[in-house]
Amino acid sequence: MMKALQKRVAGPGLELCEVEIPSIRPDQVLVKIEMAAICGTDLHIYNWDTWSENRIRPPRTVGHEFTGRIVQLGKDVVGLREGMLVTAEGHFTCGRCYYCRTGQGHICDDVKILGVDVDGIFAEYAAVDAKNIWPLKEDGDPAVGAIHDPLGNAVHAAYAHCLTGQNVVITGCGPIGLFCVALARQAGARRIFASDVNDYRMDLAKKLGADYVVNAKEDDLAAIVHQVTGIGADILLEMSGSRQALASGLDALRKGAAVSLLGIFSDRVDMDLDGVIFKQLTLYGINGRRIFDTWFQMEAALEAGLDVSPVITHRFGFEEYEEAMALMNSGRCSKVLLLP
Ligand SMILES: [Zn+2]
Ligand SMILES: [Zn+2]
Image (cartoon, rainbow, N blue to C red; front, side, top):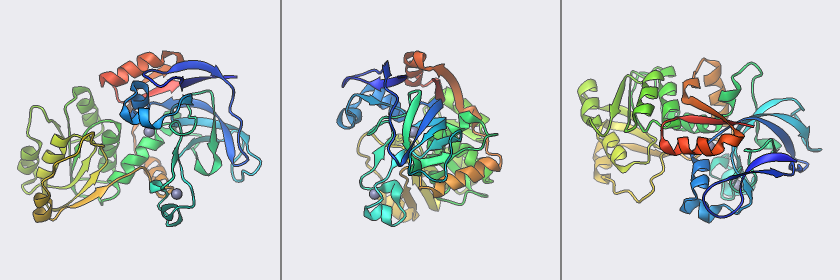
């Protein structure tokens, strides 16, 4: 038996319960979880929003961001060994659809998500498809190992553009926005403008290398960007899912600029499409991580010295999960780890 944080009934909350250690299929490995990170998705499931209500079928062990060690190999698994320090891509792709067969598994038509559609990793052990395992360096920071999944989202969004020498605007300083700040800095961005409405997150953006941190409630982001650059920004990385942030981010751009859209908007967005046309902007929708192109880019960025450790602000034991979720709901944190 093992401890696991499960959604037991359709409704708010989670339960820390004793369940059986999962048995693995021949193409899976059993991982002993050493560190888990709480994602926005987990918070949605905890709070039981409309998306969760439609998607989650209890009982379900939640969580998909982790560092752990392989303790058992399925009989068909090759290339991995017991004792390996690993994390994993949390999207299990079907391998059969048009997208999977054309190298775009990240937008698979029949994706199963760890901790959403199958039992996840807020547990002492988890069964994970071997093809999704990503080995970690033994001398790396295991806490950073646990945040590869969201860091991959940031890499996918940021590396859609050449950031070197560019004026980059990042709207939304949640963990993925903060990762983007660090990535833009490492890539040699000319100036980084980050905006949010949360002071805690704005302080972290400064720490991670933003040159200008704008409180969107108090100051006009677009006016500041135009004043500093004289022409407008080259790139917008929209990480907030806020309509106002999107509008002021677009206003901050020069003609011919490019945009990555990653923040999810809870409502439909009215957009100034004429503005997009006359400014000749290029918009990229960013979904998940390219499997495994983004992972190799992320490994390279980390090996070259990318330091995202300031984004990890809190650590809790599994039994303190209520406290951890309350902190996540308060917004006075960035990435929160759960330790079994
Ligand atoms: Zn996640
Ligand atoms: Zn597929």
